[in-house]
Length: 303
Length: 223
Image (cartoon, rainbow over all chains, first blue to last red; front, side, top):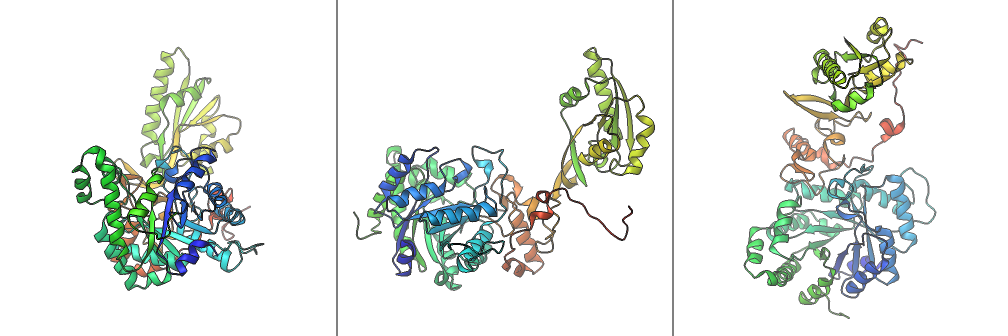
């Protein structure tokens, strides 16, 4: 059993963080990012060509992290692979010691550096979850053939509590859990009130008993970044108060204020019923993670 | 219907430039309705090509003929009398029309004047939108008549994804989120329970991925 699953089963409040692989073959970059996070978080997500920009594969990056004794969570999108490669990659990943998978559909290729690419989406994220579960629990691939060496993945999924239609987010999350998701990492939370309502629904429906909910957090570097996320990233909800607050301090102090907001948000989230941990997505700002973890008292035994 | 639009003029001109006697063939069905390859468009294109090639000092003769459909032998056969001494055919039909003419008259080069775009309909005057992906395995009964294969940018079967925002798709504020529409319509029909079901991975073998598709109906098939 992987470390992440073990900690969650022991009801430990876990911390995971996201790590973006390099836009090239430089393993030093992933080693450096891993080194920054090691000891401060319980597991590290590695993104899968996020925003459709070509990067080192999630599998290879996860294997490098595993070599550094960091627990990896392999993100896998269905954008670029059909069901054959998906299952083949899952075999390969598990053989390399990767025990956690996060199933996503993936950002549309329009946003990346190859907008001409044909997307695959042979499966969607829910079908991917079902596939990983079938491989693990039935020992079969989707086509029905038996597996030689079952990949016993701990299965994760994502949910964006802020996408529309809001009232269908819970039923859809419930579908993901029914399909086999055991842990959920949410989209970045800036609108705490809306997230609280979302969590109330989760608890009410008993979903937090069926899957571990990790609340997504992104530290904002500046008012400009907050504005960008609010206006240009689909399905994101950044309340005006946050932007006003960042604008209210001098430019060189905005990073510090962003961290402060992030720490306060974590403090609030810790009090919300049903939340099993925090997932920090510090976009190309991994070095801030240890600082946030310490400031928010997320872990007791720090290195 | 099949929606197509005319290729850029220079691209068409380049195709026919090596020829002396070119027959433009319009189609009276789908591409007439979407105003890209009907009788009127055929006349205009013939005239424009005549003028443009003459300006370049080329002596090319253009002839034109619009048939009811380029996708049925009986109508395509009407061209038999028209192709004597013709050394190229420029079809203003969709990709099917071009292919059928090429198959019927293998001795003459056939060129496409249109880009075949999609299966759709004119939502408004001058606005054509896609509605069917011809995937060969319809699920519209599960999605309130809204096709997620073509109307969801990712073609997801269990949407909406996290990019659905105020009814719009993440790829553009001009693109409605198909799954929002599906949700709204099912809600109105009091059939939201349909969304509880996980739609399983699709059998794409009935789509293009399965190779050349054909349908044989034994009751009407004649060898």
